Length: 372
Ligand SMILES: O=C(O)CCC(=O)C(=O)O
Image 1 (cartoon, rainbow, N blue to C red):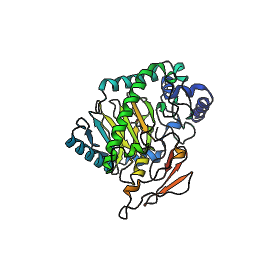
Image 2 (image 1 turned 135 degrees about the vertical axis):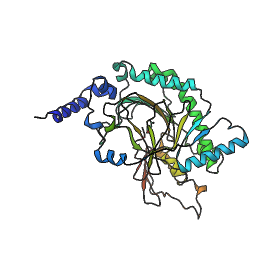
Image 3 (image 1 turned 90 degrees about the horizontal axis):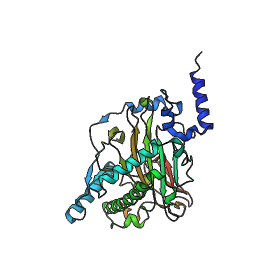
């Protein structure tokens, strides 16, 4: 009699009821498992459909921010940002002013956090979003149809009640605080360039509070014994305004561009920048929030640190719609506003985006709200 199905079911029950789930995907790998639990297996039809897409031999734009202060180069950089944001919704930036050493120290600290004694990590375990610092495997483990093969330490930095540094794990406290400040500055610079790329003063998007508050999702993607059956991060677009992503040198991030998957090759010292759903929305569809995913691999762990700029934490008091100055007779609103507490936006192709009080975006045309 084949009992493997029953055993797998028992194992999932065990994960659900015991605190084993607090050990995350790393706990599963350390237990020596060779077959991944069903909850991580992507539906066959999704995998088959995805495999049919070509792997493209093209690369997302790389923009050098080194000469930003020089007028001539500043204009050139704004133009490169505009083209990349309109076409790809993704680009990499180099010479951004944050040293390679700071980036490596941060990646190293996240690796150490994940590879430390599991009992220490468990102290930060929280399945829902009620804590500013939380460690879990997937925020929607057991509630979504399929889970991603990764563990995540998420840290929210938002006014008015700034994070207490004592709440951060010892192993990465110093690096996280320094990194968060520097990446926040870089976010402000990028919002300036993006405002200019939309034809506005550099302060425009910052004045709309787009850069207020950010969240770090520090992902640890483990080597997977059945990597062809799962994903590190499922296809999604980011719900907020902008994401600044740091990755180690393991290439697994892919962008869905012109009906093909394009690898985002890691460049030492560079950040990957991507436009989120809300920036697509306020730019009235001029900028593109593109889908992306992370494939799993059999050999080595991948680390990435996504910094999400999703606007003020108290989004129930703020409603975003297309920037008024971008609207004209030739450029009518791509999205329109209904209601008060819940804003429903419908673009011309009929795709619907719902912005709920609390700042969560979901829809059938843009993000699926799974960003991190
Ligand atoms: O790890 C990455 O490269 C991307 C992560 C991501 O897409 C997300 O957190 O939403």
